[in-house]
Image 1 (tube, rainbow, N blue to C red):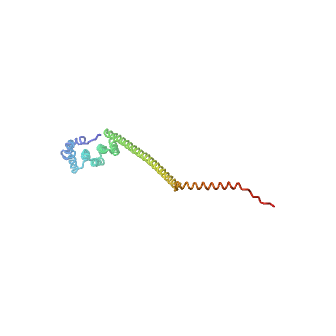
Image 2: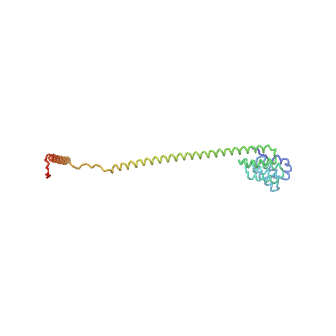
Image 3: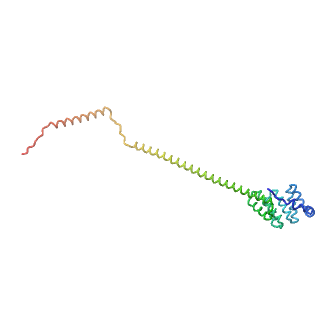
Amino acid sequence: MRQILIIGILLLAKTLQAQIKDAHAYNGNKLYAKGNYKEATAEYQAALQAKKNHETQYNLGNALYQQKNYEEANKQYESVARNTKEKGLQSISNHNIGNSYLEQKKWDEAIQYYKQSLKENPSSKDTKYNLAYAQAMKKNQEQKNKNKDDKKDQDKKDKQDKDKDKKEQQDKDKKDQQDKDQQKKDEKESEKKEEEKPQPQPSKLTKQQAEQILNALNQEEKKLKEKKEKGKGQPVRLEKDW
């Protein structure tokens, strides 16, 4: 991404004057150019305590930005953009606020400040580039979120289907077991009923006693037969009818 720095653009023309009137701001610029951002921050702060200056405040924002202290950097940029009457300084302040949000992947905020910067400087190629980049990244993030949500929904549906299949199988297994248990119960009850039916008792007579009873029955039957035969041979007695 491209970050516009006011150092080396606005302040170089005032270097000689800064050496005389504001040694802290001048030292801050030198330290910044060497990459000593922490020390540059201290010099800029000292300069601002002595005298408020929009360019110095902007450069303080840059030093804080380079240390990834985006929140404090944005406070400086916003103050400059709000208070300066210079459109160029307003534009690059808003541009760098957009950059800070871009670094934090806060696409909506970055887009907002890049658009504001372009209102103040519509010809800035750097801001146009960064705006297009932020918009592309936002679209990409939205697509990723959509894919993530779709996957989450699909995973949820798959889990629901799996749980449903599992429950149906459990219900089937439970019913099969109940049927088996009922079948066993029915078989036991059937066996119990068979056992409760009266069974023929085994004879307690000896073989000899049984033969005696059988012979006695045969004799009785023989007597009855003979008596019947005798009854057939007797003459019929007729009664007189006069």
